[in-house]
Image 1 (cartoon, each protein chain N blue to C red):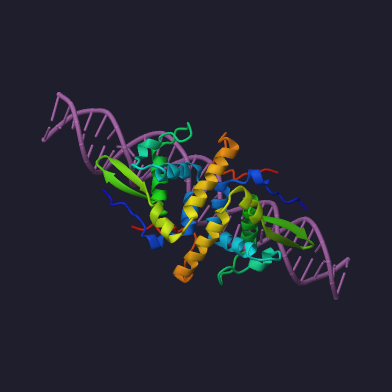
Image 2: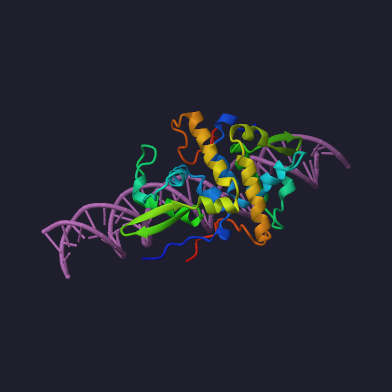
Amino acid sequence: MKPLFHPSLEDVTVEGILHALSDPVRVAIFIEIAGSACPRTCSNFQQIREKPVPKSTLSQHFKALREAGLIRGERQGVEMHNTSRCAEIERRFPGLIEAIINAHRVQAKGSGCAGAATKRRPAAARA
Amino acid sequence: MKPLFHPSLEDVTVEGILHALSDPVRVAIFIEIAGSACPRTCSNFQQIREKPVPKSTLSQHFKALREAGLIRGERQGVEMHNTSRCAEIERRFPGLIEAIINAHRVQAKGSGCAGAATKRRPAAARA
DNA sequence: TCCATTGTTCGTATTGTCAGAACAACGGAA
DNA sequence: TTCCGTTGTTCTGACAATACGAACAATGGA
């Protein structure tokens, strides 16, 4: 099995982090992992907001989060244990992750989470 | 001329903001606008980091920033006056913009800005 | 050995992005 | 007024990124 790639902390970029977290599915995954004490597997996320996410898509999302430096993945038998790299990132970009997670909390609260974030409609694209 | 579209504050999403600012050219534009007292026109950015940016690409980037709710554009004769919406966004997502701008400062300082951010290489994609 | 489970890779359709060319809008000069 | 330079937008084709079903690889238990 190919070993997993994780960028070293100094290779982590703001662009990479923002891009990774600009996807509703990925940010949901990341928030869950970041807020959980024990590691989470990919199969924990086969549904995200009552919506099923295909395995292959999930795998890509996890890869994106790993390569952005947001999570760390560790093969554990047949499954993958994912933990967040929040503490590291906090050292490099203080306050960044917290601000993003907090903003998401605000947004989820405000909209009641009802149908918000249908992917690639950033509140515009009409008119 | 078609009137410009600006999302109202409550339609501004975190995903939209993060996506808009995950592009090195757009974030450079935004930081410049946000840090400037007087409005800036599109033509102020025909070069970004010693690199020329085509007009049409610039126009698209400004549109993306507008539709994400990050800037406000106002036609003033033949040119467009762009101002940031930082203050509004700060009310909705406290600390978010500041954390992102600060992270960019850290990154620019650390790497000496040398060849960093060549677009679409989020520190990974090798191995 | 067989098989169920977990995750990755491959192939293809869809979608988004870049940038040159043509265009539209405005303002000044003749 | 007409002409023209400046500024920004739209159109279009090439290219890159993404989604997801299907096939595959790896592991561990029966």
